[in-house]
Amino acid sequence: MIRRSFLLRSAVALAAFAAVLGTAHADQLDDIRAAKKVRVAIDLGSPPFGTTDSTMKATGSDVETARLLAKDLGVALEIVQTTGANRIPFLQTGKADLVISSLSVTPERAKVIDFSAPYAQILAVVAAPKTVTIKSFADLAGKQVATARGTTNDKLATEGAKGAQIVRFDDDATLVTAITSGQVDIFATSPSIVKTVIDKAPGRGIETKFEMKQFPLGIGMRKGEAKLQSWINDWVQKNTANGQLPAIYKKFHG
Image (cartoon, rainbow, N blue to C red; front, top):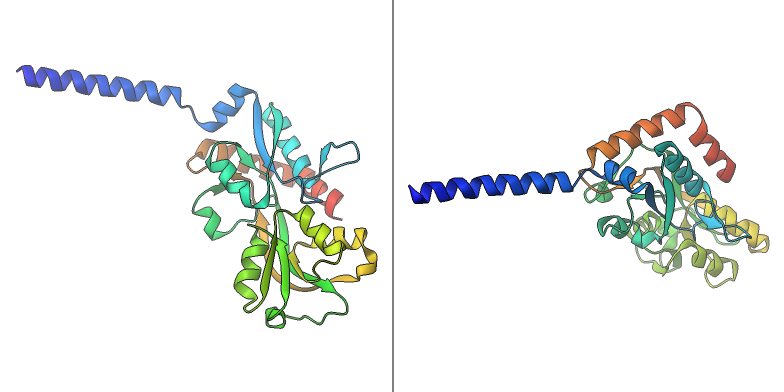
């Protein structure tokens, strides 16, 4: 009888503890609204997705997308500066609530984080000076190919360019500097970065050689936040239909 009473009290205590724990851990959408701010990881070294202007103010298509999302959510935006390699770890370690940072939706990434419906598209390409003859991955064997570490471009170049030496830079900003200064000639990147290189160093004669792959871009979030994911998916659908998201992309990408 004593044992039965003890077990009953233990069960009641555990149930009460679980209820308190569940109350204390609201879902992330509620947490963001309660905090009155959303922390969004953005790579500010990846123009025109994320960069800083002459006054050191953050700008770019992903920055404007994050600002629109925060405005519609009714909270302040806190930009958490990241790099390509740190975008997902920042989510997993709680340093950011969301990632809006030219994050391609891939099966590998979808195993560890959740994505919103696509809000834009991005191409992965290989570019080089006009004097360099490259038509496919096979032509990269024995050559140096530069890319930004931890990006989809890095993965595609590593897997596709067998026999090439992959030279990895920490972010797109240092990659651009390396290309414009002539440290490397061939690079795997996005069309927007190719345009940035051409604008900064027209004398290099850079052009796109071939397309590696096309990917949708999604807003990244931690696994299991169904309420947050549903709200963001509705937001993407609404702002795609009303033209606001396409207008942001066109403004920065042409």
